Image 1 (cartoon, one colour):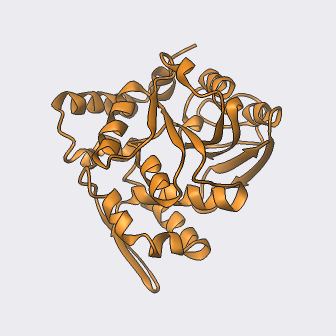
Image 2: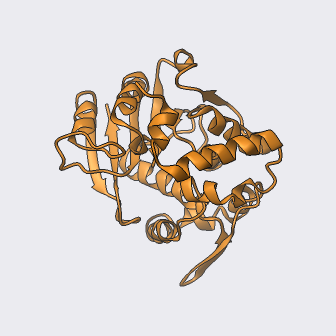
Image 3: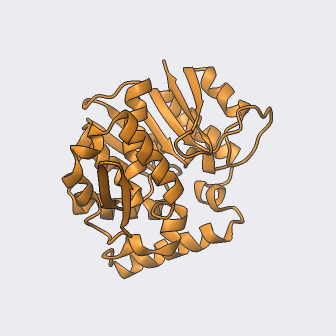
Amino acid sequence: MESHEESWHRTIKYRIEFLDDISSLHESGDYTNFRQMESLRRNISGDNAKRANGELSYLLKNNPEILTENLDKIKEWDSFGNPVLQSFERENFKINCSDSVFPPLYDITKIKENLNLSSDFDIVEVGCGFGIEAKIFHDIVGYKSYTHVDLPDMLKLQSAYLSNFKTPDITYINPYKDINKLKTHYDLFISNFAFTEITHDVQKFYFDNIIKKCSMGIIVGKMAPHIEGVMNNKITKVQIGWIESQFNIKYEKNSAYGRGGLIYFWK
């Protein structure tokens, strides 16, 4: 089985360049402007106005308080790494922030609508960007523990971001070195455009070693639920079959983004 890193970048040149850039960032030790990096914005977060605007519209319609009651927190989330800030304006609402804040707020809203959330949850996330999801979950919902599963250089970047805020109770797991350090049970699994971005065999590894340990979860990303066979970097009937063998499942199109879908699963 190929590694997570090989599975993720394959022959996609800009992903290989991105991991090289992250390695160089760690060598420099200077994270002051890391969220300005073009490759990070293209691959992880910070350069998708369409998605941000769609999620913002959904939040304002369905859960406006998560925005209006947390404006100071949003500023804090953007206070490290010098992100590119954008002006988002709607009738009776205007905010200047990065587009990185909206996916976690959208995840929280969709989980509350379809599953359950508690400040006592042990949460595990696969593919964690630069770590903002854990910070936002801590500040908005709370948790008992939060586990990151990702590539080593990404784990190091997440640690740099979250350590700046002294975000507590974070565990960093390299899946090919520390898989035995995972808990025996998690309350919630999260993966936002990460589980869907890797190859079939690596997805199966994560399903067997992580998802099966969870009581419920949400997967957001590229999906083709009508396809019978395997498609790398997409969820098809194959992966849905794995999940259905262990969980109740619900699928919906990602209308906020206009592409991909969401899978909720629970026991």
